[in-house]
Image (cartoon, rainbow, N blue to C red; front, top):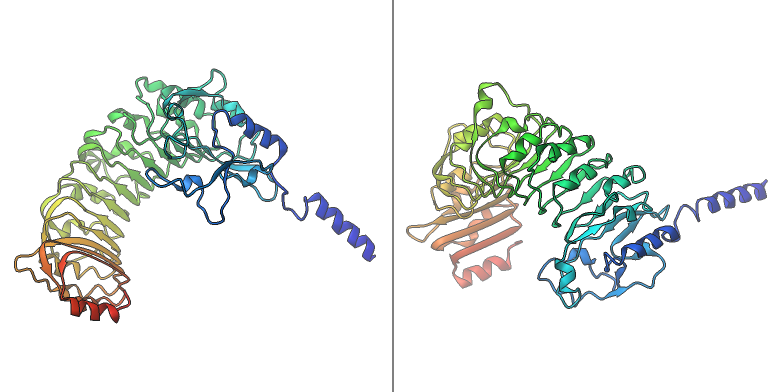
Length: 457
């Protein structure tokens, strides 16, 4: 009996490939990777030192000399730096073919700048591929009849496709729209223009599983808004630096009933039309993150956005907010956890008798010409964990005892724009403080040394 059980165990172990653990990548996929190498010459690089970061962990300006790159003699392509495999089957699941930022000594300058056409059929052998990044490669499109549509029948697990920073234009959209398994698509920094609406972004409405779409840094203009209506599965939409201008109506996004994140930064938007308020409540009741930084919004933006009471994060940094900001205008955002108002011209926060921002944990007011009257208002935001602000002081001395209510404060960034003095022992008011950054302040060296010797900061 024991021998029978042993034989059955060994048979099962063998069928699972050694306890269900792969010995390396499949030969057919390794060969397929070799066919990609003429187009992605860094595909089989690997690092020889334990603890050295992957190539794609580096960014422009960082030192590549510390990374020892080699063309891999390894048969097991699962150990290459730009490949990830299923540890059980050995099949490829992730391909990081984004061109690494580096100096031109390592990669030919011409390779970094010329455009070329991709044969997408080369990816057909990778049937378990879930993630494919082709960003920063100068790809202008696909070879005729060898586009991404060729992958639709076999790569039915592909969920994330990154084509950012290439030279793709509108003609590629029909091809991409056949990849029905996609959940995340980045087309950032390409050459989409939407000249022909019938062949525009609306073609992506065929992607019923698409949740994340990044169209930032394309010259789309306000034309893009009418082409989004059928992308009802979207949860995150990025239209940063897309040439949006003037007044935009939130009703353009109203069909995106599942939308949780909307990024409209770095456009030339002046305001948001309020016609939706006349037609009843917006259906964007799932929207939690709204980023409008780097536009031209003024103080009345808060009353317009009151129709979005479920917001948790609001970024209005780098706009035209000016003068006093009345806290009662923020009471509509009772669920707000993060409010970013950096680099505006807000001079004070006018306190409100009723304050509903009791869930606010992050507040950034850096770059606003505030005075010390703000301290008392800030002290009422008892759940703040991260606070960034700067002040102009007339007499040079700051008393922060009015902020004593911030018992949960963990991180404080504080600037003085006119030369300030501040007793360090005042920070004992914040029992949860872990990180303190002060700029433009003067301290008594003896007092400072004594404080930090006994401080947990």
